[in-house]
Structure formats: structure tokens, C-alpha cells
Image (cartoon, rainbow, N blue to C red; front, side):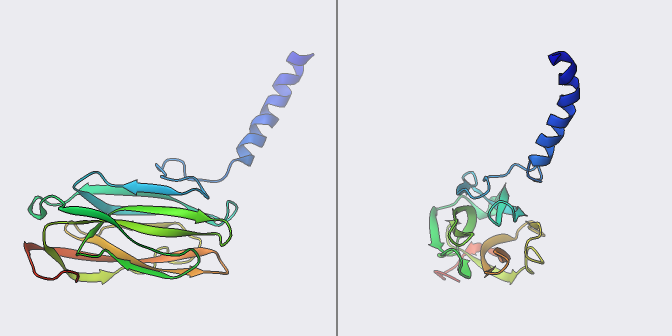
Length: 193
């Protein structure tokens, strides 16, 4: 009797399992689970060059995140120091540029159920006494709240120095404008530009 029911029930069981799973993009190497904190750092001598996120309203209006790193150009040298920069508060707007002319080489974040939002902090690395120039902000990423977001550095030799982000208390999501700069090939006297 059991052997007769099993072939009939198996397709229904499999269908219910597939329907119950969240609709994530599985091919991405996400650094977090929804509603969980994470700490991502590039290997020594590398900086962030790509950021991608996927929004899920069902799971606490949170995002899955993935990051890619790339070695800095040979002429920039090795990082002389690295540190965690300013942190924001969940539910608030935030603007952060790495202090001491640093470049973003990592991100950490903690999720807060009370506001359905995250706190953010950049891991910054300084390369000798190089200074930023030709800086600009990207358009909003994602273009509209609750969409998939993606930033890929548009040209080799540009670096992420920070970001400005707005939070919608109604939609419970963030939009980001990343600050991209080139770096001088010589040391300069500015402590924070």
C-alpha cells in the first residue's frame, strides 16, 4: 500500500517544497543570510570593485549582498594602514567617505528587526599618502527602492571611497550613491580630501 501511495505523493511533496522556498538568485555567492549580520573584507592589497544586492520583502524587507574585490594597480603600492570607519544608525540617512584618503576594502553590517534596516560601516585602507581626484557620485542604486541593485566600477583606476544612502521608512529599503575617485600617482600633503 505504501509503495502505491509514494509515487502519487512524491510529486506533491516536491512541488510544495519548491513553492515554499524563497525566490533568491542562487548563483550569487551571497555574504549574508537575510536578517543576519555580516563582515566582508577584501584580501590584503585589494579593494571593492563590484557590489550587488537582492531585496526580499517577505524576509524582513532585507537584502542579500555580494561583493567583488580586485588588486589595486602596481603603482599605488601596498596599503600602509587599514581601519573600520564611521558607523551609521539603522533607519537613518548616512553619508560616509573613508577618512585619511582611504579606499573601501570591506563592509560590515548588522540587521535590526525593530526598524527593518541595517547599520553599515566601511573598512578603509590608505595607500601611502596618495590623494583622490576626479571624484563623482553614481546615480541611485538601485534606481527604485526594492529593486535589485548593482554597481560595477566603470573603469580600471577608479575606486570606491564611500557612499551616501537614503532610507525610506515606508518602503523599508535603501538607495545608495557611491563615491568613486581616481588616486594620484604621487604622494600629496592633504590628510583628508
